[in-house]
Length: 394
Image 1 (cartoon, one colour):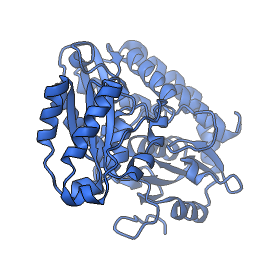
Image 2: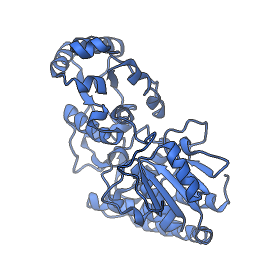
Image 3: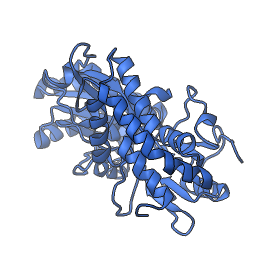
């Protein structure tokens, strides 16, 4: 099955979920923003764990619609739930997430939003999180557009601040990786990194987020290896060079010195790994996974099986992997990794199989208690290479 793409074939347990998950991944950690699931109770209860990925209370109210609301209309039910949500939690922005049940009937909820905003003085928006409008990957882009319109968010051109929009608190190992990418950017470019929209930015007041330059990464990455995640030594330099070009900025002198120093440290490790040609599986969201595969294959000489949430036509997978699969669920992916002969696997705990390979947590969901692993920046590249060499803890 080498080099086979699974697109268009039947897939069990797909990696990507419905749009509800994408909306929640985006807004779970935003201050002053409360999601409200407009649909059956099951849609709310089934997605509460997404809030835990952001390290916040899994608060997820629902309208708990029943069959009669789908048949006769659910607008009054929604307005009642919105009023209760405001009275209880006082959100600055209430985000109503439609489910398949409420999206399918095609009701117009604009009148409900107007009544709510008039009564409370707060803001509200409706986002279609149903599978009818796409999966969780699509939903992040839809959510950003809706929030940008509702909050009047614009690109900042002159400020020295940079917001990484799309990098979210729900990203795996967020705290470690955000600190690393912030240090990488600020040590390489004349920029100061400020929280992006999905990272709890204050989007309701004037500064600093509103005036910051905004680069789309992680959940909002639209393809192209130039702005893929800064994984590896070459990958980290590629990332800061892309940001420099994006902002018409010059690299700091120390940027190349840091690159050269880490490049020299990586060389002997890479030589040992390339000689062994280990087989490594990578499962993850595109922004991280394409970059990780490129590091493993092109900088370390591994053979790589890559499974991503969404394939990107802008990237030829053959340049970063030996085998490639899209939106492949747990059962299928485990069997593919076995057939590939993987000795290491980076991914969610769905592909943790200790009797078959060494596992590195890389992608939500990670259900088991494990220490998060930093993957972004120069230091993480050296640490992962040492791990593959057996010079660091398993």
